Image 1 (cartoon, rainbow, N blue to C red):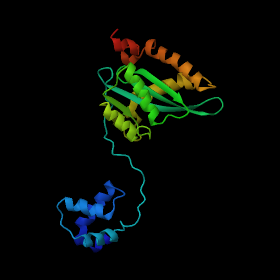
Image 2: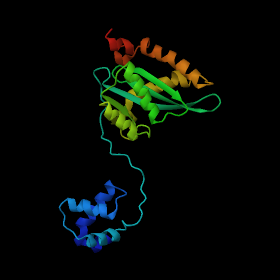
Image 3: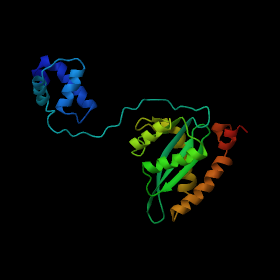
Image 4: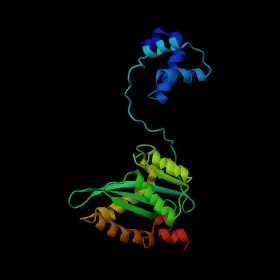
Length: 236
């Protein structure tokens, strides 16, 4: 291997490898100038010899990578609008047409704030839903999400930054870090999605709206000392 042949160049090999790991599409001159900015003095011809011997001059294919997610325990909020969790669910209508649902809950009192339903719910629909809640409920300090494409979108990240909201990403494959909404999703699927045959999105919305009212105002939760989410929020 090249590293074994040129032991004296190990330092530059390591520097180039680090740059390629962090910047998968980096070219030679960008790498050269980055290394020079660290204070390293190296002739560009020598660095290019190492660069080509490592075959970095060839087009590199790489898989899209998620940023590293910090492992964190399930944060338990102590006030309303401290942490919301949002997540998607999927189902189908009677005719086989696929639908998606976007669920938004307040982790503090397990209150369901919104269920948006459509055949497609891209990032701009997520933002539109949150904007609607901003007018009626206010916004949270943090929003907990998984690593779905709608949530890792730069559009959502920018919107959260503009509204001073911290996005909390769970680790891939760790649904327990999003336990509040995972538990809610299970209840909603049993009570609504698995219990009814829907012919249209309008039917989904009608039944969902009635179920949400019952869930928030009449259904006691053991985690809330057998109070409903609304009772727990207003301190009844």
